[in-house]
Length: 222
Image (cartoon, rainbow, N blue to C red; front, top):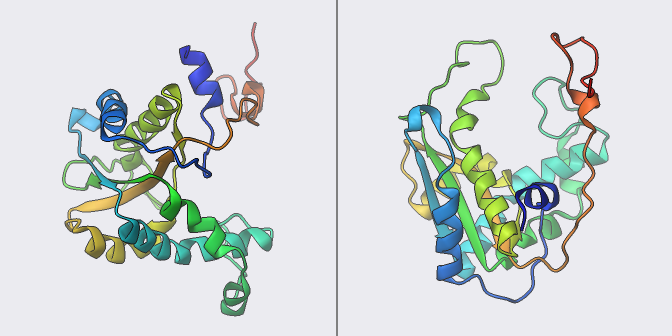
């Protein structure tokens, strides 16, 4: 596939056929994806390829805590897991939330599940002293995550970035023997998508790019 086509058609695939993802195919995807940049080129990523059905199901179960709040907040018209605006969702709302099992099912059903961690001993947290949630360390791991998905797309496979399991990181850590020095960054189900989307909904450039300042004029071709 042409590079532009890969970028424009890599979507969040959550439904997969029964086609396997062989070790050879997975190795090929990871061998290309590994050229992602990282802070100081320290390459602090670790990827766990999970095929065992019981382990995949356990990861899905651990993801239910995050998924339940996500779905409850979305149903309430809130931005899920937002740190700026406090949530009004109650414990009763969480208990009544439907669709949680279906939401995490792709994690158990995918042919292979990739659990991506990042070594906290080597990432640079340039924003650690600011009065807000830290985001900069993600720059050392999410380029790799996205490389995996775009490379998979170029090979006819697909997946999506999920982070629901992070809410139960201690359980994931114990399940997969992840050391304390590593943080769980993403869980990627991978497989052959049941269908391939080609028209993705994204904001036009002029809606999120401005000239010179945040409140500057929208960026459009001169």
